[in-house]
Length: 372
Length: 107
Image (cartoon, rainbow over all chains, first blue to last red; front, side, top):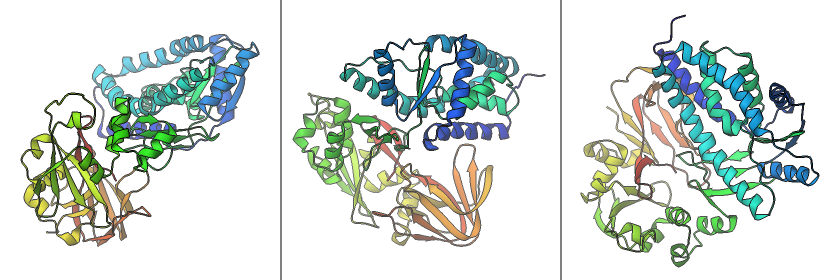
């Protein structure tokens, strides 16, 4: 069979479909867990590793996985096998399928699919969610002086990216492997986190709800950004974790500017700034009005921005610009930042047109009756 | 030629031509997606085309007037009538001074 030189147009659309399917499968399809499929998959992985079948324990959150593992530790029933299982799954599935694909497609195609399918699934599932949760669970386990059990590699949270990649080649008939089929079925069972021990495998389901911003970072100003069925939940603003109490003060605009400026964590402080109401933010950074546009947009200049938000002790001389506009449908005001090279031209309408990516005359041609 | 229509951070910009795109037909289509569910949705009693290019640009071809609605219960944008015609769907961008990058505006 000739090597696949380039993807057809249909295959390029399929890449997007496979990418979206796995992101949806991992993050947005609810917290269902097919216990039978999970058990079959885990028993198969233990079997190819030469281990006896473990007893599978199902819990409802990653923190509960750690609690369960610690209880087994107290009872002297633990002993991690994550490395052994990983090695065998790598050798008997991943390496073989990867070899099949490499043998049948050109390196350029391999890289293209890896970048556009695997890379994007990784960013959204592992990078923005799994790693964030892993970090918080690790901190909480350590805070309680418990043992932190390292997570098994074989979970939807960690492996969705690589198997989205192989799923694509499986669907176009390039990869055909019984082990991979079993692995895909296991991942589809919905195991999001797991700990593999000698006699026990402890697994948890996917989150019940995930809320994200436009950059797919965990975020909500209304509710926890991520929640599990047993009540375990975490609060985020644009990908930055906050304890619930501080998160509430920020989103309810109850944090004083003094409190905000004295926050020690620079990442938390920056995100807290980004959540301020326009009027409070303008006052806090001593913004100066430099132009009012024909449609009422106000353009402001903020000198020494980094210093103004408390991210630097010294005045760096950096200038930022923002525009403030009334919402035509409500009594709210919106504040949007402007790229500095546009802002310094001191034309609020130009700033708007640039933000829309259209010429100034087209922006000015939008009738008021066509805006809401 | 129709005039542009702005609905929050979504702009329907009238165009004459559409590049090569995958066409699907709908009577209700999300033109401004939101993870929080506060979508901007175009609705029409007559089926219309949604055209998605490989560069992920979105175009709409309306054969009869439609309505732009905001799926939100509070602080929602008013409904707008959209005349029949072909439009490019544009999302507004803004600068993020904290990360020094451009990104789409979301509400």
